[in-house]
Length: 300
Length: 175
Image 1: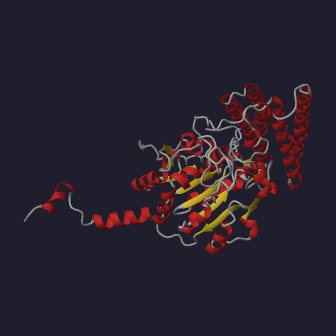
Image 2: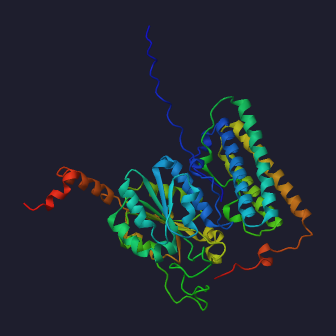
Image 3: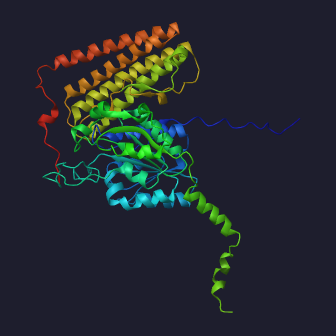
């Protein structure tokens, strides 16, 4: 008689659902905020990608949208203003297996943290950067932000802004981002699909999400206006591999609301994290044992 | 904007249709619960209570459909329909506002019921399974009943001063 119990393979894990990524913390955004839709689309996209919550890290800066890490069951770091990208790059290099997502607003990303965006892009770190662009500093109660339209009257521009807004799409395209898209909560299935595509892209991916601020935002930036204004790029027969056309379309930021993938590099280059691992492996062959590191300084 | 993803209407079976209907009620229930939580946090107690009530109503609808499914297909695992629907009967997130009146909350619910009705009206011609068509016809008609209930409640509020609640609340404080 065989006493050995037959080996029964464990059942395959149940597919993850959107609710598996939702934490018990209740969002405190203003009712009607566009970020509620973004969060819902993000849960859906994560479920579609299928990575376990412990395999994901959300990094954010400061702002309304930067609260997102707390509303997920993934690892999260609600860091300091404008510094989400450097921290996220460190996280990815320290643990390349993590799916690293950076979330923040237009002020966090393009004003206070603006200098970091270019470097994250040129390094091509494999992370996804979601910017909830509401054209105003909402958390601090309605000041001019880097993407505020020219002429906007706010508490810091009582006679109207004299500045041209930063164009986030042109900015990241010009620095060579491999995946650039724009979405709005007015099109939930489209936004969810775009976030999923960005998460799957092997390299730096960027999604500019026009997420309305219901408290300080302008009427023409609200979801109702988005529904009538948005122009899906697919309807324009745009080829996302055409970088020059993507740049041309991106110039319409602030005038047209194009949604979809502006640019997807058809031949993604190696990521910085992959190259760093490769170099570590190469140099590791000749590495001195740790207890002999100081030997090189010995006088012979 | 109600939407679905990846549903093959022509091939939709009765079991899948029931799963879809359950997911629609569940999504609406969860959204009303979220609205209630949001408005409670933002000192809008009356509208929050109304949304709590709507969440209970949607839960009753969901459990009735779930019981019907269990009777017809006992023990069969649920299909993954929740991930394929977007705001079918759930009011969209931008329907909630801090300090909204009960009237505005009722109007948000009415819009959601009208949206669900339009969804079933659009779906029915695409269906080939006769049992699914019958089920969707029932669900479409129920949406009309729900609309009538909400409209009756709005009519009862006729004495309330009109206009949006925003007209009576202070502007947000800038710093």
